Image 1 (tube, helix red, strand yellow):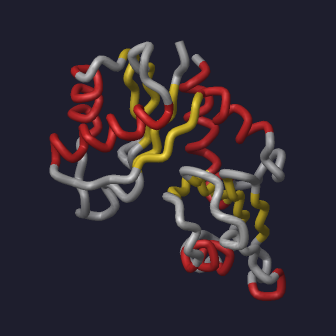
Image 2 (image 1 turned 120 degrees about the horizontal axis):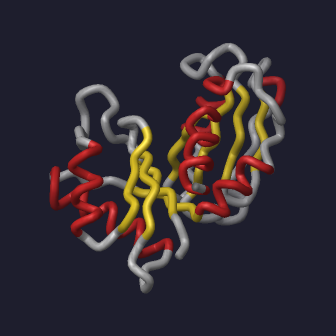
Length: 179
């Protein structure tokens, strides 16, 4: 059976869109998912779906569970355990000195041609940017809040859902999904 990682966008940030992880795990278990685990409170769920459910179904089921249980419309980006492992293997910064400053933006799909525009290196200072088909890695050596590369990403209209996680979270999710 394929394990999946569901990344919920914008929940439990401050007091907005509160979703308790124990309740979400229970709701997904009740929906037929097995070995449901969460990491942190920021909307990271690792789970195994019923045999007939694929990536799009997992995203829809998690979103539905949140809407039914807590009344929030939440976008969900999904990767298989193997895809998360590929994200870790493809990291352009093999061993970041501070995993909280390397961000991975997960895209729900590849954006339409011309929408993913890399930032001008002169405009992003010490930040670094690498874009793949459905992930963007951003190194923010001076912190996330003042990162010009992350500000650039936030200004883009990619036409797909995007949610970001720091490297520490990505590697923990890969470990959790693998075993």
